[in-house]
Image (tube, rainbow, N blue to C red):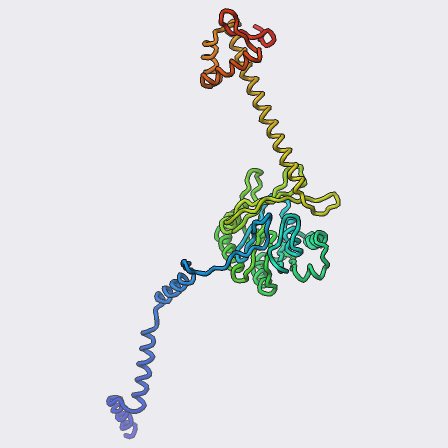
Length: 388
């Protein structure tokens, strides 16, 4: 009976909205109200997209920092912070040697024609291609070029030999090194090792996007080294990875070594801004890396002379062939033909216009390869006449 009375009392309280039951009901209403007022998943997605658009919009009054280049050649800067860049070449064409010059310039301020634009920069170098001895040789050559002691080099250069490291660990290792070392410039000699296949479009896109995020977050320049395709005439970087890198890189430098030459020439194949002028280096007889500006100049002069000679030889060959056709016509016509008829035949045979053919005939007359007799007929001179 007592239990029945309690139940009745509780019901009466609920009906009258009094006491603790009233408070509980109010709490439930509040919770339900908050749930109803929560944005839906679609609304949250829209807000996230709106925030991205707001953060990424560029207005006329948007303040953006000037580009801060790591290096320059003849006054033109390259390898800007917060961007990715590329160095490309055929196999064994001097990519790593070129990177040594970049490191040396960053450490001492200037090396050959390459000048540093940074004050005591920190350098991170990931080598995924060479064995440990050759990787160590990078520091040996830099020390030889700069004359710096080991303490100075080791305090600014973090060199990692990663040839034996699993591919899956390379990007995480790069992230960790960037976080720990806070480098200004990063060189990745062998970026192809970061992907399972350089022809995997999705994987290549993802890697390049990761690198773009990292250089922006860590305020550094990331320079990626990649081979070009094997064909001599093809200077594109390999696979989808090369395509994506070329599209996103602010600067693409190419190292070239002409067949039979020891001169390595570095030129800019693509740039979002002014292209730095080309420069050259080489190994001296003692094995040291030296400036090759003069050697390159002589090389270009020699090539120009050879090209001019080839052009001259081609012109002389064509000239001789034209004369031979003229002499053949004269022989086939019995040894003599009118100038008008000779002109008409040569227009067809040489596929040239009449004024051009007329100039040929005038030149042959001047050189006495042919002559015009008293009857106005053209004949071959005795020295040039072909046998019947």
